Length: 194
Ligand code: GRF
Image (cartoon, rainbow, N blue to C red; front, side, top):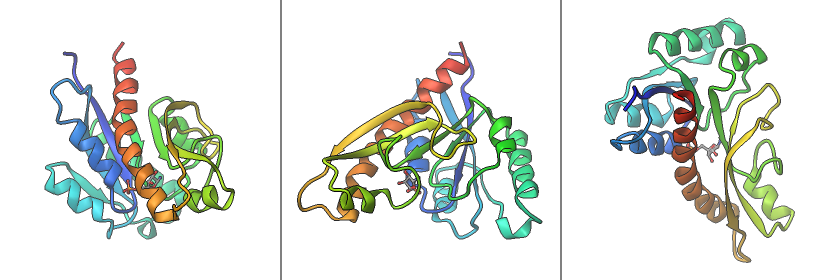
């Protein structure tokens, strides 16, 4: 096999999608490995989870930097130092600048809990219920300067049930997130090696 693509995962919280990527990357045939996890929040639970899995993990607290350009320069420096070739946003709760996105163009993915282009932005499960949608789901997409609008790599659909509340619906969507994000990363990583 050609060398595995080195992935960097950006998180802000519990990191369950990060864990799904790390677990998938244990597979002998998986074309990527998680080389580094970064969090803008030092208290993110996912940092400890990554370290426990033997993955390098570093907090870059946003408040330690003079502003977004300095924060993003530190992220890029850490990613480059780890030899990262593809960036996976996994519950990373900051909007990235056009400059950062351009640096990683075609090599930066996000997972969003809706069937994009529907329900961009936050609180997607609550909004799916409020709008009485029959279907909901999740999307892995390339990140571009337009929020939640880059080319779609993978999607999974979830039927909304009459007795759903936001937590129950989110839990079923999350199962699908954990399934499609590793598959999408594998697809993009293989394409990078062609
Ligand atoms: C997920 O629902 C993801 O789609 C969204 O934020 C949540 C992050 O969860 N962007 P986790 O940190 O991966 O557990």
